Image (cartoon, rainbow, N blue to C red; front, side, top):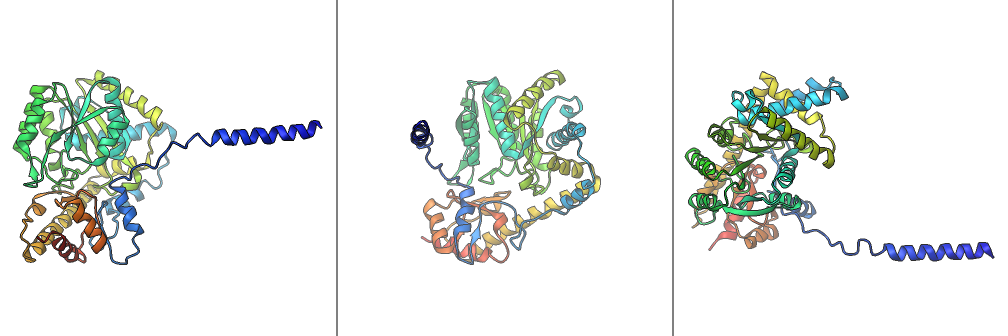
Length: 420
């Protein structure tokens, strides 16, 4: 009898627990699709043999992913290195030093005087996330001003860090260029001591960058308003083909005496997408302040993911500290950019030869990885439905996916959907 009652009690208890547990996650709904990664997902789901993925990563002219030769040689050079627990901290510290030299300049007073705090990050996304969390902790009532438009993930990063965001004017859809005066007005009208996110080169998604004189004006107004500039530099070298030139905006702000923050990524300019190599750094008043800021960044990292991998940062440092490898890297960056520029020229010329009534000069005026086409969501959908061409819904085209063998097809498809 006792055994029967015990079994009955157990079965009742299990049934009750099963019923209670069924309610734990019933309220969880599927997340909205990411506007960028969903492009690749849709592309892969399309069974059509001839299709184009114009959503993201760099490809060569055969449409194949690229491993840079400098990365291969660096990997060979460190293949016999034994990564010891005792040397990890030194490796990461050296990596940060190399990153800030690349961003701020080898001869920068910030580097010479040690007036920076930095930590390795999980690529550019992780670097932005770390800064957003740092901002929330030490300026809890602040906001982050984001350009309109910007990389879609910026909104999610600061939202998930519980930092409110606002936008400032940037892109003009009519001219497909910069709304410079509106941008200046927004900077002037923002509350003093506001945080602004800036793209120093190859603006994502528009490919529209301020020129030297415009950056000088922006820096001047930031100084008057005492704003804090945070640069997200995911494409150093990919705008002009020159890594030094692409750091011009940051160097202008440093020359003008700003304290600033910077996120760096090596996914695009070294092709280290899957290594997730990045860095976040903050310029400080002096070395003592830098030490305090670094300790707080390290504390955020410790609670978030404890420690970053070492292999990717070691690859980057090996390339940047070997004169031959660095020269090879700069040469390979130039080759990548030259191919992007060549595809821009060909796409524009092909569209113009089709006697389109539209102007296509913005294709070659914009720079970097992306061409912000101005195509409407309806036109984007038509390209996907009728021509199996995939891009983000805002009409952003990754020029890295355009090749000699598909550029004519792309031009003809765009011409078809934009015909009046």
